[in-house]
Image (cartoon, rainbow, N blue to C red; front, side, top):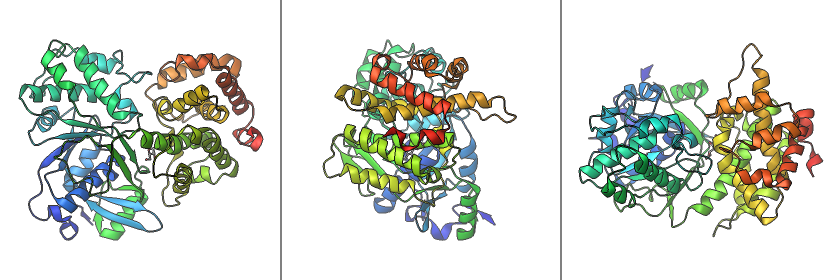
Length: 499
Ligand code: CS2
């Protein structure tokens, strides 16, 4: 069986790769499955429709796995969109994959090339190194180390480890070379992602030894364009079943195809420079204000997703489909959305939010997408402050209920406790979270009783704003849910007794 490459896939190559390939115009940080099924696919579509020199240099911030898989196949890979029928599409927008730690000079060269105009990024919530207030966390070791770098060398001999540090280096080199700055596009599930990114870049530059005396550079950064965006497409991790399917259908071996649901959406704040890939033609929605789209998606998709992940894991379930097929759990999550989340979502012209939410629950039932709850459960400390805590704050302020939102939080806390209790097992399951050490340390002091444990958890200011522990309505609801999930089986806890 031949390996996928430009030569072996000649007959199926997208038209833009048939002759000379377009030049690189974009750099992307974080070439995980989501990016490959989403932004890289949109850019592929854009080049199919309108050409342009918009191929992508994809940069892994740490792991060399994606480069090892895609380089031998000329950056090509298949996207499988899973609906009743599985459609395969060969995507050719990735020109190369670089690994930042070992190819730093090349990464800087790409970022400082005149023809590079955009950096898109999917570095997950934790990649932005923000604190509980959504600002750059100057105390994180990786940020502190990057801030202490005293010079910037175009050859990459001075290396930043964080994405923000790398971007500021590149922007500074462009500034020195009189090149236009880059447009930086966060494509992560962060509230206000563009504003947070811009603020983090500016804060880094203002605090870093190498830049803080450079008034001209700091002033130039005020002009930096960082559009906010909402990204959406459910993209489970690749598995061997997908690799086999691709092999059977195409006769070629693809080391790392990507699968996702057929639904795909990208809404971008309409502030991009005129010179851009034909994303609009490819279906990207441009709008003056993304906030309402972003709130609707984070609250109506990601919030129930996380709730299903934690409660479902406590119930011993494996996938989103399993969780949605559990009658009490799915009823509870629907009730949560109906009663406590939908009222917090601002109206969006032309979109019926109830229908939008119903369609999302339908997407969760897609039998072809095997989406593991364990994958969604990762990084709760980073995700819940974007998807659940803001709804709680809004509801408290508006006098709306938070009872079921508190169940969602309690299920996360009990999920962490479960991990601690499992440490004694022969094969303990690790807690995947950048704050794992702090979370496990708190869990180790827990007794299981809310009266003792809830204050310990609420003191975690990276996740819970201080004001929350002053809110009796929330503390009582959280304590009740916590005790219930502790003393009874999770099955009992999702019974209709919440009504
Ligand atoms: C999920 C998201 O893993 C998670 O936390 O909630 O990745 C979700 O599948 C995407 O945001 C859908 O667009």
